[in-house]
Length: 526
Image (cartoon, helix red, strand yellow):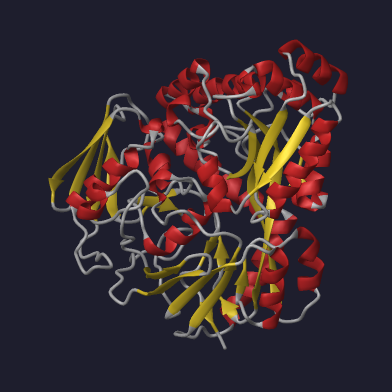
C-alpha cells in the first residue's frame, strides 16, 4: 500500500498509545494474569457460558453503536480491515489494499475461499453490497461508491480525499460487517433479517430476555497471519457459546462464583474485592473510554444552549463519576475525548468549561432561559449500573439548582428505542470506548442524525476539515478547535474517563479483551 506520511505517523502514534496504556497498572495486572493461560494446554469442545448485562435490539452492527450488538457481532461477522493488538490497521477479509496518491480511490483485493455461514463463498459482490449498506450510516465517509472490479476485487471511490478511511473501516464502534449480498440488499430500517457472516461462530438461536446461542462454524477459513488484537488467526475452540442476558450485577457475580457462568461482563465496582478474594477466578480491569451525558437538542428545555450550560455549571464531575465508578482507581477527571497518550489527537482545549461547579451561575442561566420548574426526564437503565448511578448523582446535582428531575428507568433495549423519540426525554447517559479518530464520536456530527440531534454547522465543517487535512498536524489543529467548540455548544457533556471490570473462571484459557471481550481462541478446561 502507498503510505502517506500522515497516515504512517498515525500508525506509529497508535503503537505508542498501546504500549503506554499497557504500562498502566490496571491493564498490566490483567495482562499478567492472562499470560499464565499459555501454561495450560487448551482443550477443545464444550460450552462457554457468558453472563452479559443486556440484550441488543439487533445483531446487525451496521446501523448502531450499541455495545451489546458490537460485542456479539464480533463472533458472527468480519470486516475488510481490522485492528491488531497495537491498534494498527491490518487486513482481515481483504488480502491487501492500496490507496491512490490523492487518497480518493482505495482498492481491496479479497481473500479467496472464505465461506459464509450459509455455505456460499464470499465474493466482491457481497462486499460491495455490505459496504454500501454500512456506508448509509457513515457520514464520515462522505459521498462514496463501491464498485465490483472482479470476483475478488472491489474499489472504493471518494468524492473528497481522506487518509483516514482505513480507520473508519477498521474501527469497531460500528462494525463494517460483511454479509451475503442478498441479505444486505433486503435489509430494512431495523437491519438485516438474517445474521450470516464469515466469523468463527454462527448464530443459531435467540430466546428473548434469556439468551442468544452460537455454535462453532466448522467451515470457517481463518487468516494465515498470527492472531493479534481483533485480527489474524481465529479459532472456535468451544463448540457452543450461550450468551445469557443477566441484567442484575449481583446475579452475574453469584452465577460466576457458583459455576453457572464461565465469564461475567461488567462487574459492579463494589463486587471486585469479593471476586478477587475467591480462589479460581480472575478479575480483568480494562481502560474503556468516556462517560457521556447526552442532551436532547431537538425538543424541550435543552434546545437552548444556556440550559445546557446551566447543567454543565452545576455538575461536580468528581461526585458524578465517583457515584458511577466507586473509586478513583476506575475513573479519571479529564475533559478530552482522547487518551493523553494519543498524542496526535489529545488536547485540553475547552478545559476552562470543565468541572466548574458554579451553582450561582447555573441558577442565573436557568433564570435567563425562563425555566419554571418543568420536569426534566433522564432516561436510564439498571442494565448498566454505572449509567444508572451517574443519572442518580446528576439528578441530585441538578436539584441543588432548583430543577425538578425524574428518572425514567427501562431495560437497555427499551432505552435505545425511546431515545430515538425527542418527545420522550431530556437527557440520557451512554459510554464511548476510545476511538481512532474524532469521526467515530457520532454525537459530534449533525449529519449522523444520532439521538440527541447535534446541530452545529461549525463542528460539521471542522470534521470535514480534519478528514481532508494533508497532515496530522493540521488535522490536530482543527480538532483542538472542534473540542473547544464542543465545550462551548455542549451537545453532550464529557464527564471523564473510566475503566470497566469483568471476571472469569480460571478454567477459561486464551481470553483477551480489546474493545470488548473476544471469545475466539478461547477454551474452557473443565
